[in-house]
Length: 80
Image (cartoon, rainbow, N blue to C red; front, side):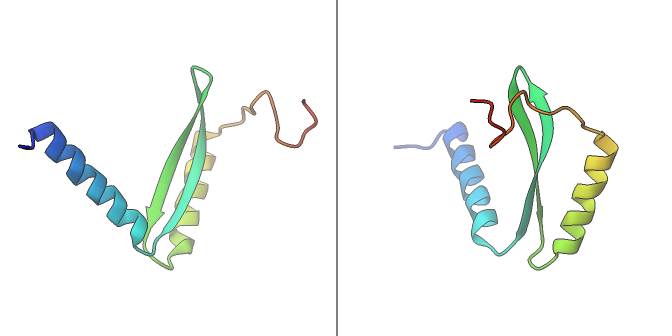
């Protein structure tokens, strides 16, 4: 089977993604808001053992975005 540019790109993209998750790294996910009722998030990945930088960047982004909207439900909030 000959690889087309699309399948070759997909394989390379998957390999790159897998490599990121298999190496020791610091990772944080920021909730950004909603789009069409679905949650949006941003994933920040930093160097291994560099939690300070990742947390500092995440804090700056959260403060700059000033996202204050809460979802209509809160886990454990008794909204069954």
